[in-house]
Image (cartoon, rainbow, N blue to C red; front, top):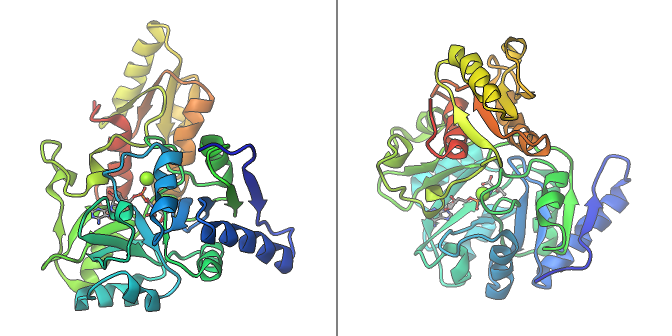
Length: 346
Ligand code: TXA
Ligand code: MG
């Protein structure tokens, strides 16, 4: 499917409230008509379609070039919509919803028949969250259906954290984009399977393991998040993701980065470094990008994907990246960097 024009609805501050709502109403209208539109959430931009309409959901997979065995997250505006999606809500799930919704926690539960098959890629479970973003909530309310939405990037590319990123990837492939500027968290939601006796973490994200365990006690963590030799339990986690066009190498020992840069330069390559505010002055490379401060990992999460996209814009051929501690938000940041590197760790 291709579109002559992709609407770019700028829901920005210079618009008054009425113009603002008009844009969102138009986007919601397209969703009810079975089309696909991109919208901002607090994590990354989503690519939404009516989760109860099989034909509409298939258009998401087509627009992204997403493998059909990779299930989508269903977005709702209120817990009252859960009834049409899931068979039961276990008490741990209820506690987590009370604590973290709206917010960057996706909860997997046993699904009802009404959910379109392609949303769940044939699984018996469905992933659900309430996003914490005024534009997303208004859109969901106006569309008045649960909205299936993966991140609004081309499959394999970093998730979009601005309307511009979505336009770059999906122009001509979808009806429209609701642009609400830069997203807040910057990394995708945490994905937790609560259909199991003890909840299992499939994807680290905006809500940390530490925060979840403070509410419901010990959870399990998908073994593949700790060892490259294990097959991920969640379909989407087996794919390479977030990769810049150039070779992306994670470097544990920061002192090695200048050595590796010098070698790449000698080989005639256009070099890049992904660094932090604290170290930005210590390297010589063609493209140097600081993705925030080590003292504030939320700033790194917020800028990570924009930073990865910069290397493509500036055509870096080989990029060396610093690493982060495996704790709190650092776990999600390292998970995305490891995927971007596709196992290439020095
Ligand atoms: O923050 C986010 O979660 C964003 C925004 C738009 O909400 N969405 C997002 O969606 O990141 P996506 O499709 O890029 O990632 C969804 C992840 C995939 O890894 C998928 O395999 C997993 O959730 N998933 C979805 N349903 C599942 C299920 N029933 N069982 C296991 N994993 C599931
Ligand atoms: Mg994604």
